[in-house]
Length: 512
Ligand code: C2O
Image 1 (cartoon, rainbow, N blue to C red):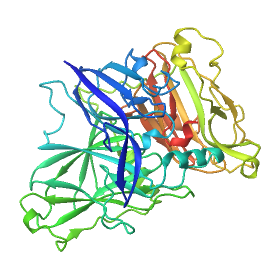
Image 2: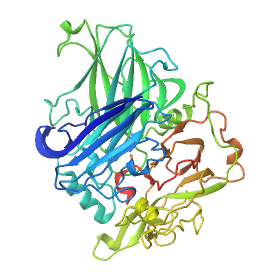
Image 3: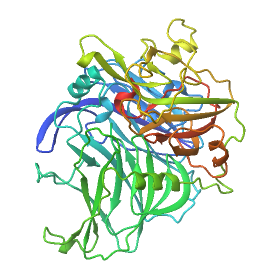
Image 4: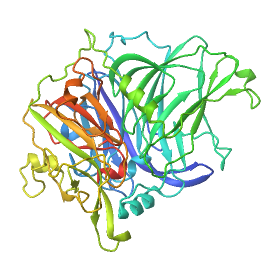
């Protein structure tokens, strides 16, 4: 294992996309930002230097940070933000993890443009549990707004709705030609006939769950969130914000054609969404001489935007590899059993639309960002920053699939509440999506841990029947899981990483 040094200069960068230019915040001038490549057991020393006029912090999404909670990055949770002109040195070791993860700004709206890939290779001499791919490529999926993201988000947060839908999705920063900007560049994916590639796909979007597909080719999922899975063949990958998915792609189609690569929205909620599909092109090397506008591109048949059945089938098909080398350590007994309702509520407010502001909440608690970082407050015993009375269950259970009247169960209380777990406790959390006000899929992310997704279902969780169906043999292990619209997801993990850890919906406005 070695020590690897990175320097992340956070700077303003003038960028042209969708036929218009604007300054954006980037790391080292790049969108997406630089890729970190390291091996399991390596130590990373990443110096983040803030050259912009915003407070900044950067989170290493999915890195366990075993006993290095100070390096995790979310502003006001584990550290104070890095102020203009200041810097912060993140120092952590990649213990027991290999695969694809990513990094992103973890303050306000900055992660729209401040994000990039983390590639953790296995230890030297340790093979993948599948045939070694000929080459590997990183595919970062994002969103792009023509207008100023800061303004959009500030506007939206006043009333609590999602920011207006983005103007295009991006694949490694390119949207492909779109109707009101046909000259917009495309990402190209050159392949050699007969070779197998590994694509490391990251959903870095602020708001949208995505379908990803490549016309004429089957993809084999081999890893999600930096944990190996049983190989699963599919023509469509479903990926929520925060999640990463490695797939194998064998270039076995007719080499004389080009093939469309596409990323398009999935949503089954009645909310505005970005209906512009990002496209890229796969072509066969050696046949490039014939590539021209006239060469036929095989189009991908895209799922409808509300194809819940495709999203559900994909999610339910993922299984941990559970091999001798990579065993599953899912807790079979539970010390702490929690039930969290997640969804949007509404609070009265003066001087806002209709007198109510939409708010995200868990067990009717809406998180209030403290002014002192929680980990600092905990470590130095500073009182008055948080309370540790986060409710283990909702105070007022009801039928979560039936819409409620405003004001009945919809109001939330504000608080900076923590749930305290003893070291090494085994924990189960059932995340129940509520249909109050708006239903929406919520991709839930837990910092500092991987968890096992032991069950999921539609409608209300049934504490008598549903646990009998839990998968305690080979459940998928990950750091971000979708809680389906009108349904629930159950996760288990061992609280073996001391610290203060954020758990939140990865849709940008739902963290507040
Ligand atoms: Cu991907 Cu709290 O973050």
